[in-house]
Amino acid sequence: MANPVILRKAPAIFVNHGAGPLPLLKPVTDPDHGPTRAFLEQVAPQWLGLKDLATKPVAIVVVTAHWETIPEVTISSGESHDLLYDYYGFPSDAYSISYKAKGSPAVAQKIHDLLSQASIPSKLDATRGWDHGTFVPMKLINPEEDIPVVQMSVVGSWDPAHHLRIGQVLAALRDENIAIL
Image 1 (cartoon, rainbow, N blue to C red):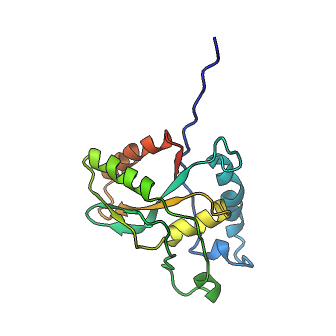
Image 2 (image 1 turned 135 degrees about the vertical axis):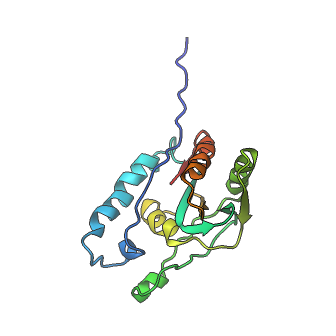
Image 3 (image 1 turned 30 degrees about the vertical axis):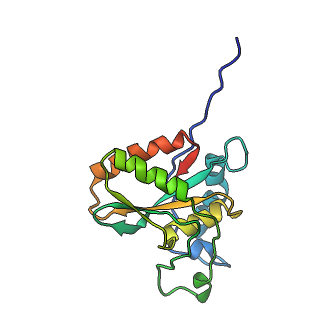
């Protein structure tokens, strides 16, 4: 009898991006960002399986606390997204950061459908830019920019039970090798 194939679920991890865009600015003048950069550049990619084609996620969904929407979850659904520099008072370099990973309308639609099936209101948004809660960690985690990213909002009510239910619904994506941050 042959050994069964064990399928890996894509990971779901929490990441900290530090203070605004500071972890991306050179030179990093705040020594407190050293551990954040090290985690995002070394540990998170390992946990996400980015270095192995057998485990590399087909997409990454980033739930960002920097995008609150009411009354529904909003999902970035464009093929590409500009960056939203949603911070102020940083050096000029902070406003020329780029991150060119593609979006994934198909994954966005899948999320929308899963939430809809669970009676959780959601909508698609093809135009809003990715905020620094998405592009700062992703630029350090995946500088190759070769994995599609879908950004999701949190619901402005901040109801923990509602967000827990959203997370439970999103867990199904992990079976399709879609990672969640």
